[in-house]
Structures are given as C-alpha cells and as structure tokens.
Amino acid sequence: IAGITQAPTSQILAAGRRMTLRCTQDMRHNAMYWYRQDLGLGLRLIHYSNTAGTTGKGEVPDGYSVSRANTDDFPLTLASAVPSQTSVYFCASSEFLSGTGKDTQYFGPGTRLTVL
Amino acid sequence: AQKITQTQPGMFVQEKEAVTLDCTYDTSDPSYGLFWYKQPSSGEMIFLIYQGSYDQQNATEGRYSLNFQKARKSANLVISASQLGDSAMYFCAMREGRTNTDKLIFGTGTRLQVFP
Image (tube, rainbow over all chains, first blue to last red; front, side, top):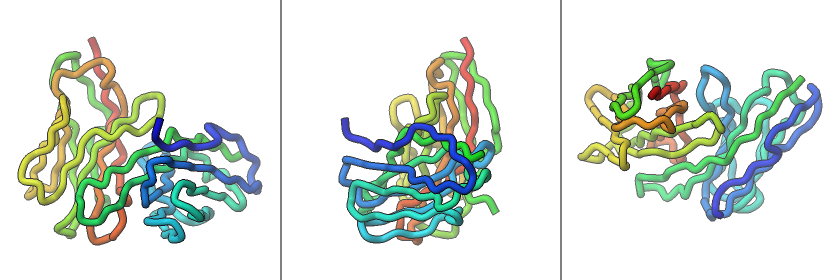
C-alpha cells in the first residue's frame, strides 16, 4: 500500500540524547515536511524539502536538522533532545507541482516522542 | 497575528444532523489554497477537502462541503448527515502561493463529538 511510514511509532528519550526520526514515502512525491503537534497549538512546520537535495526552515526549526539525500527519505534529527521537544511528530509529502493548485499533503502516522 | 483561526475548541452534534466548523484565514497573497483535515483518536491526519482561492464554486466531497466566503476570508467546513465516526479533531489549513512551497499553516483545531 502506497504511503508514508514513520519510525519509531513512539520513543522515550533522555534529555541530551541524540535521536533521528525516520520518514519514508513511496509515492515519489517531490516535497516532504516535518511538523510537530502540541496540544492547543495545532501542527507547526519544523523543516521542509521541495525536492531531493534541498531543505528549508519552517516555523519552529531550532534544535532540529533534516537531510534529503534522495526522493523517498526525509529523516529528522534532534541533536541534543530537550523536554520541550516532547511532542507528536508528523512527516508529510506532496507532489509540489507549482501552478496545479491542489497539491494535497499526505501525512504519515506520526511518532510520539517523550523527552525526560 | 494568527493566519488560521478556528474559534470553536469543541462542537457537539447529534447523529444525522449537519454541523458547521468555522475557519477564518488571513493572507494578502491572492493565490492560496485552503484544506481541511480530520484527525480521529487514532492520530492519523486524513485529508478531507480542498478549496483554491480562484475556484468559483464551493468544494464538495461526499458529505463534506466547504463554505468559501472570500470577502470574509472564511472557509467553513460543513458536514452533512453526521455519523458517529465523524467524531474527531478537525483542522483547517492554508497554503500561500507566494511561499513557493506546499507548506501548510494550521489552525488549532475543533474537536467534534457526534452523539446518538
């Protein structure tokens, strides 16, 4: 079944540890995104990538880094986790065909991260 | 200033009745897209409906319709004939054309509860 997979499903992490959240899509979408979801704040964009080899900062990029070595994978790394990074993380992708209008984003199942 | 505002933290509706979830947006970009997503208790984000800023007609997808009032900058979601399975969080989101990405700006969501 085509779609987006994320790993791990959930994780408890000690503060100061490094953590990489994995995201893989098989829809050959150009663009990929990382959001975090916090109660009362909706989803906020962390980083994005319009195409393989390029990345950009979103609304809340501090403490996170991403890479886009190929079309399918878009890992999110927390170099030194802090408790405020406790959240649910969603990866998403879209075709990103400028001018076509309906570039719907499709979301992965999410990763629940707790930093203690 | 909030770019997407959902003023209803929670809504109740009886099964088989229609319900309107409010969304207002703020942008000076003439080209934008508006999206609604559903997030059930299982956590996944499910795309429901899309409205482009240049679309002449309101979008419809099955029991979902979008009441798009451009002058008022509102994009309310109407769910007709509510079902128990419609109980979920609903998020309104906007994509601005000038950003040259598909990144979405989300509202804080409305929790809908459908009762028998």
